[in-house]
Image (cartoon, rainbow, N blue to C red; front, side, top):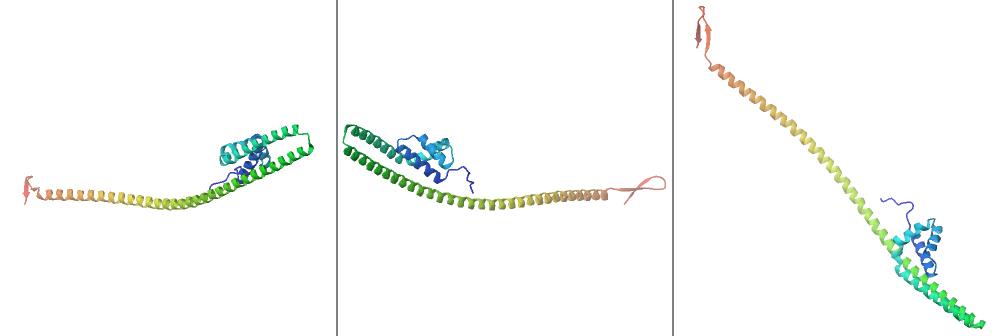
Length: 215
């Protein structure tokens, strides 16, 4: 089973990083400020948070980032229009109406943004669950492969032992065969020599020192 690093990013860490960064984008803040806030919340450096966002998390929330940027532009535009209207209108009641309208629009934007983030987070949760299921399936497959590999290794060792034994037996039989051939060759030579001795004439010496043939 694959070991999990102690400093690995969890799905909850990724969700916090996405939520805070989108909020800072929506409110016109900087991503660096977002990374610093996330780092304080999850106990990581802002650099680590920035690297995680740019290398992994950002691409999952491209649509949400565009929506947050549009909301930031709309908010800035509304702030500018509200400032112009406030400077031109001298009536307190009119200014109060403009402020209430602005606050209501801000609440609507905030609600829309939260809904969007929740929707994307739910989609990511479903994706994470599917990835987790696939990882577990791969782990089961790896365990099955490991068991199969262990069995094949055992069979290979057994066959190797049998082959070594057969080679040892073959060498012993071959040595015995060579020894038998040598014995048979010696026996054949002795037989030939015996037959030659029997066919040779034999002599003996008489009392006068003469040789006479023995029949």
